[in-house]
Image (cartoon, rainbow, N blue to C red):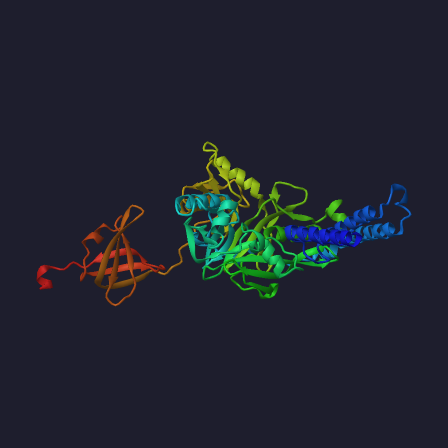
Length: 541
Protein backbone atom coordinates (compact mmCIF):
# COMPACT_ATOMS: atom_id res chain seq x y z
CA UNK A 1 0.00 0.00 0.00
CA UNK A 2 2.87 2.35 0.85
CA UNK A 3 4.44 1.84 -2.58
CA UNK A 4 1.09 2.43 -4.28
CA UNK A 5 0.55 5.58 -2.22
CA UNK A 6 3.98 6.90 -3.13
CA UNK A 7 3.38 6.15 -6.81
CA UNK A 8 -0.01 7.83 -6.64
CA UNK A 9 1.48 10.94 -5.02
CA UNK A 10 4.24 11.10 -7.63
CA UNK A 11 1.68 10.77 -10.44
CA UNK A 12 -0.45 13.52 -8.90
CA UNK A 13 2.56 15.83 -8.59
CA UNK A 14 3.55 15.15 -12.21
CA UNK A 15 -0.05 15.71 -13.33
CA UNK A 16 -0.29 18.98 -11.39
CA UNK A 17 3.03 20.17 -12.86
CA UNK A 18 1.84 19.22 -16.35
CA UNK A 19 -1.45 21.10 -15.95
CA UNK A 20 0.42 24.14 -14.60
CA UNK A 21 2.78 24.07 -17.59
CA UNK A 22 -0.08 23.58 -20.10
CA UNK A 23 -2.00 26.54 -18.70
CA UNK A 24 0.80 29.05 -17.92
CA UNK A 25 3.20 28.04 -20.77
CA UNK A 26 6.49 29.13 -19.15
CA UNK A 27 9.60 29.08 -21.31
CA UNK A 28 12.15 26.47 -20.23
CA UNK A 29 14.95 29.01 -20.18
CA UNK A 30 17.27 30.34 -17.46
CA UNK A 31 16.61 33.88 -18.72
CA UNK A 32 12.90 33.49 -17.96
CA UNK A 33 11.60 34.61 -14.55
CA UNK A 34 8.67 32.20 -15.02
CA UNK A 35 11.11 29.29 -15.16
CA UNK A 36 12.71 30.27 -11.86
CA UNK A 37 9.34 30.70 -10.15
CA UNK A 38 8.21 27.34 -11.53
CA UNK A 39 11.30 25.58 -10.14
CA UNK A 40 10.91 27.27 -6.76
CA UNK A 41 7.22 26.32 -6.72
CA UNK A 42 8.19 22.69 -7.34
CA UNK A 43 10.68 22.85 -4.42
CA UNK A 44 7.98 24.34 -2.15
CA UNK A 45 5.64 21.49 -3.17
CA UNK A 46 8.43 19.01 -2.41
CA UNK A 47 8.90 20.53 1.05
CA UNK A 48 5.18 20.27 1.79
CA UNK A 49 5.08 16.69 0.51
CA UNK A 50 8.17 15.79 2.58
CA UNK A 51 6.67 17.25 5.75
CA UNK A 52 3.42 15.33 5.25
CA UNK A 53 5.18 12.10 4.33
CA UNK A 54 7.69 12.22 7.19
CA UNK A 55 5.16 13.74 9.55
CA UNK A 56 7.68 16.41 10.52
CA UNK A 57 6.46 18.37 13.54
CA UNK A 58 7.15 21.99 14.40
CA UNK A 59 9.98 21.12 16.71
CA UNK A 60 11.71 18.96 14.08
CA UNK A 61 11.75 21.50 11.27
CA UNK A 62 15.18 22.90 12.18
CA UNK A 63 16.78 19.50 12.80
CA UNK A 64 15.44 17.32 10.02
CA UNK A 65 18.25 16.77 7.49
CA UNK A 66 16.04 16.20 4.45
CA UNK A 67 14.07 19.35 5.19
CA UNK A 68 17.29 21.30 5.64
CA UNK A 69 18.49 20.21 2.21
CA UNK A 70 15.24 21.22 0.54
CA UNK A 71 15.13 24.51 2.46
CA UNK A 72 18.73 25.28 1.51
CA UNK A 73 17.91 24.52 -2.11
CA UNK A 74 14.96 26.95 -2.02
CA UNK A 75 17.04 29.68 -0.38
CA UNK A 76 19.86 29.09 -2.85
CA UNK A 77 17.54 29.39 -5.82
CA UNK A 78 16.02 32.57 -4.37
CA UNK A 79 19.47 34.07 -3.73
CA UNK A 80 20.70 33.26 -7.25
CA UNK A 81 17.56 34.83 -8.72
CA UNK A 82 17.90 38.03 -6.67
CA UNK A 83 21.64 38.38 -7.33
CA UNK A 84 21.08 37.69 -11.03
CA UNK A 85 18.35 40.33 -11.16
CA UNK A 86 20.62 42.88 -9.47
CA UNK A 87 23.59 42.13 -11.75
CA UNK A 88 21.26 42.40 -14.77
CA UNK A 89 19.90 45.81 -13.82
CA UNK A 90 20.91 49.28 -15.09
CA UNK A 91 22.21 50.08 -11.58
CA UNK A 92 25.45 48.20 -12.26
CA UNK A 93 25.32 48.06 -16.08
CA UNK A 94 24.42 51.61 -17.11
CA UNK A 95 26.97 51.79 -19.95
CA UNK A 96 25.83 48.48 -21.44
CA UNK A 97 22.17 49.54 -21.32
CA UNK A 98 22.99 52.90 -22.89
CA UNK A 99 24.61 51.15 -25.86
CA UNK A 100 21.80 48.67 -26.56
CA UNK A 101 20.35 50.99 -29.21
CA UNK A 102 22.47 52.73 -31.80
CA UNK A 103 21.12 56.18 -32.57
CA UNK A 104 22.11 58.33 -35.54
CA UNK A 105 21.38 62.01 -35.95
CA UNK A 106 19.27 62.76 -39.00
CA UNK A 107 18.38 65.77 -41.13
CA UNK A 108 14.62 66.30 -41.11
CA UNK A 109 14.05 67.78 -44.57
CA UNK A 110 16.38 65.21 -46.20
CA UNK A 111 15.13 62.07 -44.42
CA UNK A 112 11.42 62.88 -44.16
CA UNK A 113 9.96 63.44 -47.59
CA UNK A 114 6.67 65.19 -48.17
CA UNK A 115 4.16 62.36 -48.43
CA UNK A 116 1.13 62.33 -50.68
CA UNK A 117 -2.09 62.23 -48.68
CA UNK A 118 -2.97 58.76 -49.91
CA UNK A 119 0.07 57.48 -47.95
CA UNK A 120 -0.70 59.24 -44.66
CA UNK A 121 -2.55 57.20 -41.98
CA UNK A 122 -5.48 59.41 -41.03
CA UNK A 123 -7.00 57.09 -38.42
CA UNK A 124 -5.85 55.85 -35.05
CA UNK A 125 -6.49 52.39 -33.61
CA UNK A 126 -9.67 53.48 -31.81
CA UNK A 127 -11.32 54.69 -35.01
CA UNK A 128 -10.14 51.56 -36.83
CA UNK A 129 -11.90 49.42 -34.21
CA UNK A 130 -15.14 51.35 -34.76
CA UNK A 131 -14.91 50.85 -38.53
CA UNK A 132 -14.12 47.16 -38.04
CA UNK A 133 -17.12 46.65 -35.74
CA UNK A 134 -19.37 48.43 -38.27
CA UNK A 135 -18.11 46.17 -41.03
CA UNK A 136 -18.83 43.10 -38.94
CA UNK A 137 -22.31 44.41 -38.19
CA UNK A 138 -23.06 44.52 -41.91
CA UNK A 139 -22.00 40.89 -42.46
CA UNK A 140 -25.24 39.10 -41.62
CA UNK A 141 -23.82 35.64 -42.35
CA UNK A 142 -20.92 36.06 -39.88
CA UNK A 143 -21.90 38.53 -37.17
CA UNK A 144 -23.75 35.91 -35.12
CA UNK A 145 -20.71 33.60 -35.02
CA UNK A 146 -17.68 35.88 -35.05
CA UNK A 147 -16.51 39.30 -33.94
CA UNK A 148 -13.49 41.45 -34.75
CA UNK A 149 -10.43 40.87 -32.58
CA UNK A 150 -8.90 43.96 -30.95
CA UNK A 151 -5.37 43.50 -32.36
CA UNK A 152 -5.44 45.88 -35.38
CA UNK A 153 -1.72 45.78 -36.23
CA UNK A 154 -0.54 48.69 -38.38
CA UNK A 155 1.51 47.54 -41.37
CA UNK A 156 2.45 48.55 -44.89
CA UNK A 157 0.57 46.51 -47.47
CA UNK A 158 1.44 47.12 -51.12
CA UNK A 159 2.86 50.52 -50.18
CA UNK A 160 -0.30 51.57 -48.32
CA UNK A 161 -0.72 52.10 -44.56
CA UNK A 162 -3.30 49.58 -43.32
CA UNK A 163 -4.44 47.99 -40.08
CA UNK A 164 -5.33 44.30 -40.03
CA UNK A 165 -7.02 42.15 -37.43
CA UNK A 166 -8.41 38.61 -37.50
CA UNK A 167 -11.92 37.67 -36.51
CA UNK A 168 -12.43 35.66 -33.35
CA UNK A 169 -15.09 33.27 -32.12
CA UNK A 170 -17.94 35.15 -30.43
CA UNK A 171 -18.13 32.62 -27.56
CA UNK A 172 -17.03 29.18 -26.44
CA UNK A 173 -20.16 27.66 -27.99
CA UNK A 174 -19.45 29.44 -31.29
CA UNK A 175 -15.91 28.03 -31.20
CA UNK A 176 -17.25 24.52 -30.68
CA UNK A 177 -19.60 24.76 -33.68
CA UNK A 178 -17.14 26.50 -36.06
CA UNK A 179 -13.67 25.28 -35.06
CA UNK A 180 -13.57 22.52 -37.69
CA UNK A 181 -13.55 25.14 -40.47
CA UNK A 182 -11.57 27.76 -38.59
CA UNK A 183 -11.96 31.53 -38.74
CA UNK A 184 -13.01 32.44 -42.29
CA UNK A 185 -11.77 36.03 -42.69
CA UNK A 186 -9.82 39.01 -41.42
CA UNK A 187 -10.45 42.75 -41.59
CA UNK A 188 -8.19 45.12 -43.53
CA UNK A 189 -8.59 48.89 -43.16
CA UNK A 190 -6.78 51.40 -45.37
CA UNK A 191 -5.71 54.11 -42.91
CA UNK A 192 -5.47 56.75 -45.64
CA UNK A 193 -8.72 56.20 -47.55
CA UNK A 194 -10.67 54.72 -44.59
CA UNK A 195 -11.76 51.84 -46.85
CA UNK A 196 -12.75 48.79 -44.77
CA UNK A 197 -12.65 45.29 -46.27
CA UNK A 198 -13.58 41.89 -44.91
CA UNK A 199 -11.10 39.59 -46.62
CA UNK A 200 -12.51 36.07 -46.89
CA UNK A 201 -10.08 33.15 -46.96
CA UNK A 202 -10.27 30.02 -49.08
CA UNK A 203 -9.26 28.02 -45.99
CA UNK A 204 -10.05 29.24 -42.49
CA UNK A 205 -7.47 30.23 -39.89
CA UNK A 206 -6.96 27.34 -37.47
CA UNK A 207 -4.39 29.01 -35.21
CA UNK A 208 -5.60 32.16 -33.44
CA UNK A 209 -5.78 33.79 -30.03
CA UNK A 210 -9.41 32.69 -29.64
CA UNK A 211 -8.74 29.01 -30.33
CA UNK A 212 -8.44 26.55 -27.47
CA UNK A 213 -6.21 23.64 -26.54
CA UNK A 214 -3.31 22.92 -28.92
CA UNK A 215 -4.56 25.27 -31.65
CA UNK A 216 -4.34 28.31 -29.42
CA UNK A 217 -1.55 30.33 -31.04
CA UNK A 218 0.36 30.88 -27.77
CA UNK A 219 0.32 27.16 -26.96
CA UNK A 220 1.16 26.22 -30.55
CA UNK A 221 4.22 28.50 -30.51
CA UNK A 222 5.30 27.29 -27.06
CA UNK A 223 5.21 23.63 -28.09
CA UNK A 224 7.10 24.49 -31.30
CA UNK A 225 9.90 26.15 -29.34
CA UNK A 226 9.77 25.33 -25.58
CA UNK A 227 12.89 27.41 -24.80
CA UNK A 228 11.96 30.64 -26.63
CA UNK A 229 10.88 33.66 -24.61
CA UNK A 230 8.37 35.43 -26.84
CA UNK A 231 7.59 39.12 -26.97
CA UNK A 232 4.24 40.63 -27.96
CA UNK A 233 2.61 38.86 -30.90
CA UNK A 234 1.35 40.80 -33.90
CA UNK A 235 -0.92 39.84 -36.78
CA UNK A 236 0.30 40.63 -40.32
CA UNK A 237 -0.34 39.63 -43.91
CA UNK A 238 2.26 39.01 -46.61
CA UNK A 239 2.19 40.52 -50.09
CA UNK A 240 -0.30 37.85 -51.20
CA UNK A 241 -2.68 38.58 -48.31
CA UNK A 242 -1.83 35.35 -46.44
CA UNK A 243 -2.29 35.85 -42.66
CA UNK A 244 0.65 35.25 -40.30
CA UNK A 245 1.41 35.58 -36.63
CA UNK A 246 4.70 37.38 -35.95
CA UNK A 247 6.34 36.33 -32.68
CA UNK A 248 9.58 38.14 -31.74
CA UNK A 249 11.95 36.09 -29.58
CA UNK A 250 13.56 38.02 -26.75
CA UNK A 251 17.32 38.21 -26.47
CA UNK A 252 18.92 39.12 -23.12
CA UNK A 253 22.25 40.85 -23.58
CA UNK A 254 23.09 41.73 -19.96
CA UNK A 255 23.25 39.10 -17.23
CA UNK A 256 20.36 36.71 -16.67
CA UNK A 257 17.41 39.03 -17.14
CA UNK A 258 18.67 42.35 -18.52
CA UNK A 259 19.28 44.14 -21.80
CA UNK A 260 16.23 42.85 -23.65
CA UNK A 261 16.24 43.15 -27.45
CA UNK A 262 15.09 40.77 -30.21
CA UNK A 263 17.27 37.92 -31.45
CA UNK A 264 14.93 35.93 -33.66
CA UNK A 265 11.47 36.16 -35.18
CA UNK A 266 9.06 33.22 -35.49
CA UNK A 267 6.48 33.29 -38.29
CA UNK A 268 3.40 31.12 -37.96
CA UNK A 269 0.99 30.68 -40.86
CA UNK A 270 -2.41 31.30 -39.25
CA UNK A 271 -4.12 28.87 -41.66
CA UNK A 272 -1.78 25.88 -41.65
CA UNK A 273 0.16 26.42 -38.42
CA UNK A 274 3.48 26.06 -40.27
CA UNK A 275 6.28 27.68 -38.25
CA UNK A 276 9.47 29.27 -39.61
CA UNK A 277 12.24 30.93 -37.59
CA UNK A 278 14.54 33.72 -38.80
CA UNK A 279 17.46 35.53 -37.23
CA UNK A 280 16.57 39.17 -36.73
CA UNK A 281 18.91 40.34 -39.51
CA UNK A 282 17.36 37.91 -42.01
CA UNK A 283 13.68 38.64 -41.43
CA UNK A 284 11.65 38.92 -44.69
CA UNK A 285 11.13 42.52 -45.77
CA UNK A 286 7.34 42.26 -45.83
CA UNK A 287 7.33 41.91 -42.05
CA UNK A 288 6.80 45.31 -40.45
CA UNK A 289 6.80 44.63 -36.71
CA UNK A 290 9.65 42.68 -35.13
CA UNK A 291 10.26 45.27 -32.41
CA UNK A 292 7.24 46.53 -30.49
CA UNK A 293 6.86 50.28 -30.06
CA UNK A 294 7.04 49.91 -26.27
CA UNK A 295 10.38 48.09 -26.50
CA UNK A 296 11.82 50.76 -28.84
CA UNK A 297 10.68 53.52 -26.49
CA UNK A 298 12.32 51.74 -23.54
CA UNK A 299 15.60 51.26 -25.42
CA UNK A 300 15.74 54.94 -26.39
CA UNK A 301 15.02 55.96 -22.80
CA UNK A 302 18.06 53.90 -21.74
CA UNK A 303 20.08 55.67 -24.44
CA UNK A 304 18.88 59.12 -23.38
CA UNK A 305 19.04 58.85 -19.59
CA UNK A 306 22.14 56.72 -18.94
CA UNK A 307 24.77 58.75 -20.81
CA UNK A 308 26.56 59.67 -17.58
CA UNK A 309 25.71 56.63 -15.49
CA UNK A 310 22.83 55.46 -13.36
CA UNK A 311 23.32 57.89 -10.45
CA UNK A 312 23.25 60.87 -12.79
CA UNK A 313 19.97 59.62 -14.28
CA UNK A 314 18.42 59.74 -10.80
CA UNK A 315 20.18 62.68 -9.10
CA UNK A 316 21.98 65.25 -11.27
CA UNK A 317 20.21 64.30 -14.51
CA UNK A 318 22.73 66.16 -16.65
CA UNK A 319 22.06 65.77 -20.40
CA UNK A 320 19.26 63.30 -19.66
CA UNK A 321 16.58 62.93 -22.31
CA UNK A 322 13.44 60.80 -22.40
CA UNK A 323 10.60 60.09 -24.76
CA UNK A 324 7.26 61.83 -24.37
CA UNK A 325 4.06 60.05 -23.41
CA UNK A 326 2.67 58.35 -26.50
CA UNK A 327 3.80 57.38 -29.98
CA UNK A 328 2.52 57.00 -33.50
CA UNK A 329 3.55 55.30 -36.72
CA UNK A 330 4.96 56.64 -39.98
CA UNK A 331 5.27 54.69 -43.23
CA UNK A 332 8.64 55.29 -44.92
CA UNK A 333 10.30 53.23 -47.66
CA UNK A 334 7.88 50.32 -47.24
CA UNK A 335 8.66 50.02 -43.52
CA UNK A 336 6.77 51.14 -40.45
CA UNK A 337 8.67 53.55 -38.19
CA UNK A 338 7.69 54.34 -34.64
CA UNK A 339 7.61 58.08 -33.95
CA UNK A 340 7.77 59.78 -30.55
CA UNK A 341 8.93 63.12 -29.21
CA UNK A 342 11.99 63.65 -27.01
CA UNK A 343 12.06 66.01 -24.04
CA UNK A 344 14.25 66.67 -21.02
CA UNK A 345 13.67 64.66 -17.85
CA UNK A 346 12.67 67.87 -16.07
CA UNK A 347 9.27 67.52 -17.72
CA UNK A 348 8.93 70.97 -19.28
CA UNK A 349 6.35 71.72 -21.97
CA UNK A 350 8.73 71.61 -24.92
CA UNK A 351 10.46 68.99 -27.02
CA UNK A 352 14.13 69.10 -27.87
CA UNK A 353 13.66 66.76 -30.79
CA UNK A 354 12.01 63.57 -31.92
CA UNK A 355 13.02 60.03 -32.77
CA UNK A 356 12.10 57.60 -35.56
CA UNK A 357 12.77 53.91 -35.07
CA UNK A 358 12.30 51.14 -37.63
CA UNK A 359 10.12 48.36 -36.23
CA UNK A 360 11.76 45.71 -38.41
CA UNK A 361 15.45 46.58 -38.10
CA UNK A 362 15.63 48.80 -34.96
CA UNK A 363 17.41 51.46 -37.07
CA UNK A 364 16.92 54.66 -35.09
CA UNK A 365 17.39 58.31 -35.98
CA UNK A 366 17.21 61.33 -33.70
CA UNK A 367 16.27 64.76 -35.05
CA UNK A 368 17.04 67.97 -33.19
CA UNK A 369 13.89 70.00 -33.70
CA UNK A 370 12.86 72.14 -30.75
CA UNK A 371 9.19 72.86 -30.32
CA UNK A 372 5.96 72.03 -28.56
CA UNK A 373 5.24 68.64 -27.04
CA UNK A 374 2.59 66.49 -28.61
CA UNK A 375 0.20 67.16 -25.72
CA UNK A 376 0.60 70.93 -26.22
CA UNK A 377 -0.11 70.55 -29.93
CA UNK A 378 -3.19 68.45 -29.17
CA UNK A 379 -4.46 71.13 -26.79
CA UNK A 380 -3.88 73.83 -29.42
CA UNK A 381 -5.86 71.84 -32.00
CA UNK A 382 -8.70 71.17 -29.58
CA UNK A 383 -8.78 74.86 -28.70
CA UNK A 384 -9.59 75.74 -32.31
CA UNK A 385 -12.75 73.61 -32.20
CA UNK A 386 -13.64 73.90 -28.52
CA UNK A 387 -17.25 74.75 -29.38
CA UNK A 388 -17.56 71.32 -31.04
CA UNK A 389 -15.75 69.52 -28.19
CA UNK A 390 -13.75 67.35 -30.57
CA UNK A 391 -10.88 65.31 -29.13
CA UNK A 392 -7.42 65.21 -30.72
CA UNK A 393 -5.62 61.97 -31.54
CA UNK A 394 -1.91 61.58 -30.86
CA UNK A 395 -0.07 63.55 -33.58
CA UNK A 396 1.79 62.24 -36.58
CA UNK A 397 4.91 64.17 -37.58
CA UNK A 398 4.96 65.26 -41.23
CA UNK A 399 7.10 67.39 -43.51
CA UNK A 400 4.80 70.09 -44.88
CA UNK A 401 6.63 72.51 -47.18
CA UNK A 402 9.89 71.80 -45.34
CA UNK A 403 8.36 72.54 -41.92
CA UNK A 404 8.12 69.91 -39.14
CA UNK A 405 4.37 69.74 -38.62
CA UNK A 406 2.08 67.85 -36.26
CA UNK A 407 -0.81 66.30 -38.16
CA UNK A 408 -3.79 65.60 -35.90
CA UNK A 409 -7.19 64.01 -36.48
CA UNK A 410 -10.09 65.47 -34.48
CA UNK A 411 -12.80 63.02 -33.40
CA UNK A 412 -16.32 63.45 -32.10
CA UNK A 413 -17.90 61.68 -29.12
CA UNK A 414 -18.63 58.65 -31.29
CA UNK A 415 -14.93 58.25 -32.08
CA UNK A 416 -15.24 59.21 -35.74
CA UNK A 417 -12.86 61.66 -37.44
CA UNK A 418 -14.62 64.92 -38.32
CA UNK A 419 -11.82 67.41 -38.95
CA UNK A 420 -8.06 67.60 -39.35
CA UNK A 421 -5.49 69.93 -37.84
CA UNK A 422 -1.90 70.91 -38.65
CA UNK A 423 0.22 72.49 -35.93
CA UNK A 424 3.67 73.91 -36.54
CA UNK A 425 6.13 72.15 -34.23
CA UNK A 426 8.33 75.18 -33.57
CA UNK A 427 5.54 77.78 -33.54
CA UNK A 428 2.59 75.87 -32.17
CA UNK A 429 0.37 78.97 -32.15
CA UNK A 430 0.10 78.38 -35.91
CA UNK A 431 -2.85 75.99 -36.11
CA UNK A 432 -4.84 75.19 -39.26
CA UNK A 433 -8.14 73.32 -39.32
CA UNK A 434 -9.88 71.74 -42.30
CA UNK A 435 -12.76 69.40 -43.12
CA UNK A 436 -10.43 67.52 -45.49
CA UNK A 437 -6.69 66.97 -45.45
CA UNK A 438 -6.14 69.06 -48.60
CA UNK A 439 -8.21 71.93 -47.20
CA UNK A 440 -6.27 71.73 -43.94
CA UNK A 441 -2.97 71.89 -45.82
CA UNK A 442 -4.10 74.90 -47.89
CA UNK A 443 -5.09 76.74 -44.72
CA UNK A 444 -1.80 75.79 -43.08
CA UNK A 445 0.30 77.03 -46.00
CA UNK A 446 -1.57 80.34 -45.93
CA UNK A 447 -0.82 80.69 -42.21
CA UNK A 448 2.87 79.95 -42.81
CA UNK A 449 2.98 82.79 -45.35
CA UNK A 450 0.98 85.27 -43.27
CA UNK A 451 3.11 84.60 -40.18
CA UNK A 452 6.38 85.02 -42.06
CA UNK A 453 7.49 81.44 -41.56
CA UNK A 454 7.62 80.91 -45.32
CA UNK A 455 7.98 83.38 -48.18
CA UNK A 456 6.32 83.22 -51.55
CA UNK A 457 8.73 81.40 -53.81
CA UNK A 458 9.95 83.40 -56.78
CA UNK A 459 9.01 81.97 -60.14
CA UNK A 460 12.32 81.46 -61.97
CA UNK A 461 10.89 79.53 -64.90
CA UNK A 462 11.82 80.78 -68.37
CA UNK A 463 9.09 82.37 -70.48
CA UNK A 464 8.80 80.55 -73.82
CA UNK A 465 6.84 81.22 -77.01
CA UNK A 466 5.12 78.93 -79.47
CA UNK A 467 3.01 79.33 -82.62
CA UNK A 468 1.01 76.77 -84.53
CA UNK A 469 -2.34 75.36 -85.44
CA UNK A 470 -4.55 73.89 -82.71
CA UNK A 471 -4.74 70.12 -83.08
CA UNK A 472 -6.86 69.35 -79.99
CA UNK A 473 -8.95 71.40 -77.59
CA UNK A 474 -10.81 70.40 -74.40
CA UNK A 475 -12.58 72.21 -71.56
CA UNK A 476 -12.66 71.54 -67.79
CA UNK A 477 -13.72 73.32 -64.60
CA UNK A 478 -11.18 73.58 -61.75
CA UNK A 479 -12.17 75.17 -58.42
CA UNK A 480 -15.10 76.90 -60.12
CA UNK A 481 -13.01 78.34 -62.97
CA UNK A 482 -13.26 77.21 -66.60
CA UNK A 483 -10.00 76.17 -68.28
CA UNK A 484 -9.26 75.28 -71.89
CA UNK A 485 -6.51 72.79 -72.69
CA UNK A 486 -4.87 73.08 -76.12
CA UNK A 487 -2.39 71.08 -78.11
CA UNK A 488 -0.71 72.67 -81.12
CA UNK A 489 0.94 71.34 -84.20
CA UNK A 490 4.58 70.32 -83.74
CA UNK A 491 4.43 69.97 -79.94
CA UNK A 492 3.37 67.16 -77.61
CA UNK A 493 2.79 69.51 -74.66
CA UNK A 494 -0.57 70.51 -73.20
CA UNK A 495 -1.25 74.22 -72.68
CA UNK A 496 -3.55 75.42 -69.87
CA UNK A 497 -5.52 78.64 -70.53
CA UNK A 498 -7.81 80.14 -67.88
CA UNK A 499 -11.03 81.68 -69.21
CA UNK A 500 -10.87 84.31 -66.47
CA UNK A 501 -7.50 85.55 -67.78
CA UNK A 502 -8.13 85.04 -71.51
CA UNK A 503 -11.80 85.24 -72.44
CA UNK A 504 -10.96 85.07 -76.16
CA UNK A 505 -10.00 81.41 -75.75
CA UNK A 506 -13.68 80.51 -76.11
CA UNK A 507 -13.32 81.44 -79.80
CA UNK A 508 -10.60 78.89 -80.38
CA UNK A 509 -11.25 75.73 -82.33
CA UNK A 510 -9.22 72.97 -83.94
CA UNK A 511 -7.30 74.11 -87.03
CA UNK A 512 -7.02 77.71 -85.85
CA UNK A 513 -3.54 79.22 -85.55
CA UNK A 514 -2.45 80.74 -82.20
CA UNK A 515 0.64 82.29 -80.69
CA UNK A 516 1.22 81.76 -76.94
CA UNK A 517 3.76 82.71 -74.29
CA UNK A 518 3.98 80.16 -71.50
CA UNK A 519 5.94 78.66 -68.62
CA UNK A 520 6.55 74.94 -68.34
CA UNK A 521 4.76 72.91 -65.65
CA UNK A 522 4.69 69.19 -64.89
CA UNK A 523 1.26 68.30 -66.25
CA UNK A 524 0.25 71.28 -68.42
CA UNK A 525 2.15 74.45 -69.36
CA UNK A 526 0.70 77.68 -67.97
CA UNK A 527 -0.17 80.17 -70.72
CA UNK A 528 0.80 83.81 -70.02
CA UNK A 529 -0.41 85.41 -73.26
CA UNK A 530 -2.66 84.36 -76.11
CA UNK A 531 -2.89 85.73 -79.64
CA UNK A 532 -5.40 84.28 -82.10
CA UNK A 533 -4.70 84.63 -85.84
CA UNK A 534 -7.95 85.74 -87.39
CA UNK A 535 -8.84 84.07 -90.70
CA UNK A 536 -11.52 85.12 -93.20
CA UNK A 537 -13.89 82.75 -94.89
CA UNK A 538 -12.37 83.57 -98.28
CA UNK A 539 -8.87 82.94 -97.09
CA UNK A 540 -9.89 79.57 -95.66
CA UNK A 541 -11.43 78.59 -99.01
